[in-house]
Length: 362
Image (tube, rainbow, N blue to C red):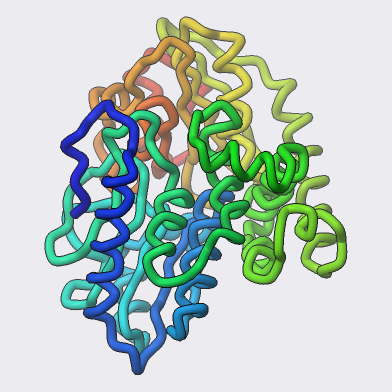
């Protein structure tokens, strides 16, 4: 595991150099005769991380295969364990998918690159995590730093910048973002992030076209230009999401005590966007946007707070019976959420003080 004992400090050049050495040493245990399997999240940070790692490893002479995890999937689920055991791989890299106490595939040479609050430290694998550093490096930035150990990746800095903007915005303070802004332009980077996030938020939830773009484009302007057919698919997804978002913005929050609850029903993943929007208007509340239409049989919700509340702690204190550690209360202290089956959701909102109108059929 990477050393995060310097909590509260900025990542230094020595810290980055140590992570590169660890990454290079971990790859030495991979089987060169088989491809490296990269598992990645489907948001801008996860897509950028995956593209950086794949492109760098391919440049170094290693073969890679990619598996994006989409709606309702988790790298630590029994279903994913079965899939991983059936694959022929020389090693495994998981990017932006969280951290658990157990490895995704015990016995397999593994690297986990992640910036979320860890819910456990896996043994026998390399964990590259900037948790505890201020500001916390995104997974894409961690991946770009590590990738520099095996290939020349200066031209891929724009990918790291996409992940930083997607997860942290434009005021993160990282010098790498400032350099990318100077080279590629902030408008192009910002617009590329918006476009790349659209497919996973659309009803189909397929981020494959977004990843395909990042694996071949030479910068954000190429992502936006339309020279690749995937751009049109992303633009159509963005239109669908914008329509759902406009409808979601008209839903009034229900307030009980310190919690503002916003009920939604759409196959589009707009609940994090709605929660983020209301966070600025209800600064003294914990805002929870709940979507009953995102995935059948589940209530997906996003929690945000404008008052600095530790949302992971809040959700831990209000954890209902039926919530599991995979689908509930992970992420960041200021941006958490999860998914609950209807009976657990009903217990959750009842405990928060909401009535039957906020419950869902079981």
